[in-house]
Length: 193
Image 1 (cartoon, rainbow, N blue to C red):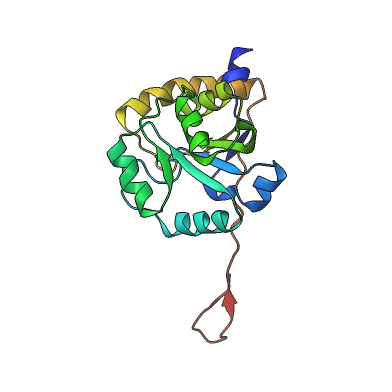
Image 2: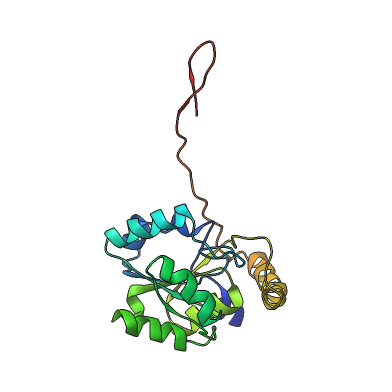
């Protein structure tokens, strides 16, 4: 079936942070090729987040390479990636595989060492499947999209519905946030968490 072969992600996660050292080691991967908009940051944001910064530092310390491959403009991608000292490929024309090949060439890595992370089935997942690389779909950060992406979302919604009906679409893996105990002012001086 064509839909399963080209549009079915290998994994589906709630947020990029689900990919941690354990996840990468479990899949024997060394490289994360990530989309930018609605994958790492909101599509209309120009700033990184503290969470993203912490995640990048943790993954780099563990020895993993991370590179952004985006269909967005050089100006948009460069502005963001420079803030975080990330290598990138802009104007990638996903789902074509040229951008992924450039990214691996920059890092001197092989396709079997990589995962491709993105929020769109018609660009990121199709590109990863065409390239023969493990594909990880992430829930979009923002509920809104640029106009062109909204068109893609319509068609990917149909594809996902069909794959779910066939009971082959992966269930989304959700982050389990650690609760921290906070001291609360009150009569008993107890903790909530």
